Image 1 (cartoon, rainbow over the protein chains, first blue to last red):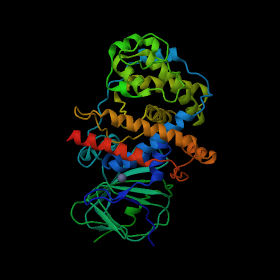
Image 2: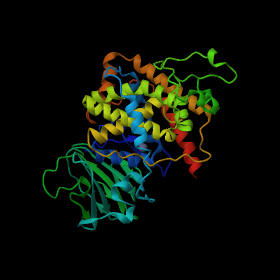
Image 3: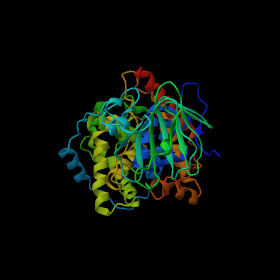
Length: 226
Length: 218
Ligand SMILES: [Zn+2]
């Protein structure tokens, strides 16, 4: 049975069709997501203006919450703040790793550059992955899945976000291409297949506890080459 | 109330430097005495113009007005999010210093000042309290043709103010649930994004501003 939940908007062909849920966007705005999830959200927002506007509207809710707080924690030291401004002038913008056509800038910051800078590790069958350095409450990784690779039925634990950066995969719920996010909760059981054509590159984040060494995300367990 | 944003008068700002009175919005040709000073706690205070003055003239009086309103709220927000007094004070000073230094990055067609300050404070909270990095979406830089129209700004600011009013009139339980989410008391799986707030107009307004920026980048 398929229980993949995605938030579908109507969009012209070639544009993002599988979006983030309002809950994820609000949690991103509230600043309560694990870092790995925030990375997927920020990367999707870099590609999808529809979700970016939604996220900004949840920031507006945050602004309204801030504005309506009763300021009962007492005053803050104005003179000390001025001294801080004078003693620590605006920091010059540090050079950021450069994004490319596949890797948007928030992701480039975690890779240390674009696609060429990814340090892939082989996991078999032509599939490669690269774990990105985030806080330990969830794991973010890049996946490289050769075109035409199928992933048989299986279950998994926790929440898993999979954002397509290049190529595409399909399952019973539809087709996921660049910018599309698949949001899979527990008990999802379906069969994604990486399309023929370009190899598929995804950013995946999961908050499932790592139960055993060598644990791999759902997309990779187990895969077979057609 | 936002008409001075695009017709900025440097002379008016220089009068305000060094003064500790709240920033007033005197119209050209009117005597300063005729202009009623707005108390800083006035919810309709023109924060956009204050940020504009900080940006263009390093105007301390404008900064003081922003500080008096937002610093105690940022501090309360950080304490509600789990900071102790000393850390909240330290962090608040940092947030307000960031407001000063980054005033040029504030885009009034995409956010109210309260929203902008909220995002600075939230990012500081993630950094200091949760000890995590905060991935932010790719920057949509201001291009030369990307300057927003004045009514775009007014519209967004008015929508934000209306959202604040709508929030105030929500049933107490519902408002508390939203506050809990933003103070970090709910995990992402516990959050209910259905707020009962009218977010539709804000979303479409921000979307238009993004379209303008995208267009200018081409
Ligand atoms: Zn989207």
